[in-house]
Image (tube, rainbow, N blue to C red; front, side):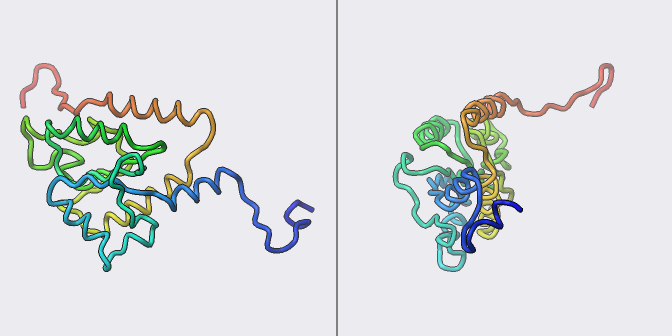
Length: 186
């Protein structure tokens, strides 16, 4: 005979971690960072057809201090990179990032000196959203996946250390280079 059987009906049992995760996942406020054509699809997601409000995200923050999700939509230039990092640093903790579109994720077709080859060189990215430009349905799917990630996050004193380690590991990654065996040519 367990505790569940002794409680009256209508009593809900859960852990504090699950309850906090559920509350955090349903109160995500985005700071949109639209830089190119992906921003049009991002704006479309807030419209009546796709209705971002059903996830509790209808309030786009005017200031980064009120936001906890950054959606980077479009290509990021080298001049815009420090601004993006500053906005990310001003956001409240815990914070998450969605890289929307192939240009934000990997530089896209702009392989030159002026475009950052992936926003993950500037800020840690939680969800990568492919496409050129990705459809609003794809953004909604990535938001649902982010909600699952938020609900399953651990609480406690080791959480901040884990986030810092993950951020440093992601920022320390270098672009992949093709390894050519010695004595061969391409």
